[in-house]
Length: 416
Image 1 (cartoon, rainbow, N blue to C red):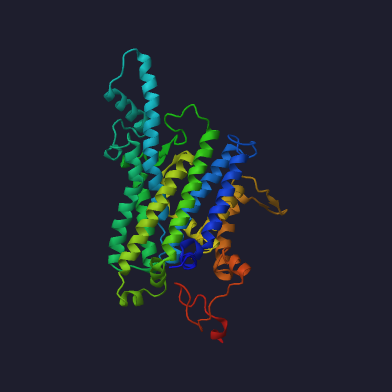
Image 2: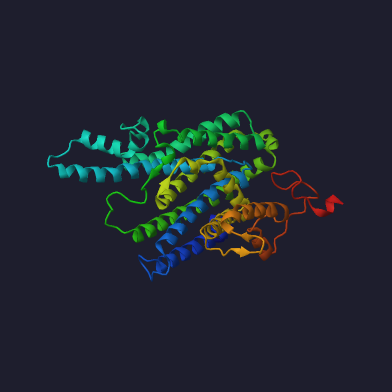
């Protein structure tokens, strides 16, 4: 194989958008660092740095949603549940370790050294006293170990997705019925976690996650930038991974499953196996994004698992342009930052004389109208603007359906 042939067939040569994405992300990360209060000219506040870091995490979970919906054609309305589970798994260690520091410092004032059992009992009372309990539930068995909880960030949502996906795909549940099942799973999990005896403090959730154990002397200015760096790295790594997944034979197969599942099954491919792998992989990616998101948010509660959160996720991907990874990132970043601006009270109200438009109240209406408008008039989303810029046109399929929605994008001449 000549050097020219190798370059032509290389992953980066076939996917120049990956290099552009990593370059833009690197420049953005460097720019935010220079403008931060911790390492730069203090132009950007610590709270805004945290907002940007959380936005990068939302972009990562949007990538996962785009892979399973835009490429595999599976509209999952439960992936924000995996996002929240990842946050809970890491949050358990953060809350345990931070509370341990407080309890040890308090017991040290008593004069006599505290035993391990006294320390553990004190931690349990501090964490679960709010729900009337004083003992650790079994699910907190490894909360004292950072590495164990880090493993559970991946293992718990991965196993849950594997079991749920195996049951659903084995039964060949597809389309809207699968979407309803994923939404039901999310709702059931949220309702369970709202109970005080769930072991995760009910509707109080886990709090104080922004305080890293052993780093009490480090300011939030520094921590916000550290988490921003971690979020940027995770997003970059996730983008490269998923771009690699969809660029090869695997990506061709899942797109074929999206367009005509029965034909792919007839050709001898294990359709259920491919769908199960995608479902599990995206659940793990969503959980990693959640594990990075909630230490920046500082708190997590069962409301984060509400089905509406997963619907928002689908809206972000649709607005950005599903079936193109950069579109999912653009959609999540655009809607997330715009939402922070509108709901944070920074958008000026519009007085109409008889009524004043307060954007805090009208933001969700605007988001819903945007989703409807994109669906009807711009099915390629914001990412479709790149197609116009590069002069790309949809292939002439003579009226054949393009994508998972039958007849959604038919050629105009075939409709005459």
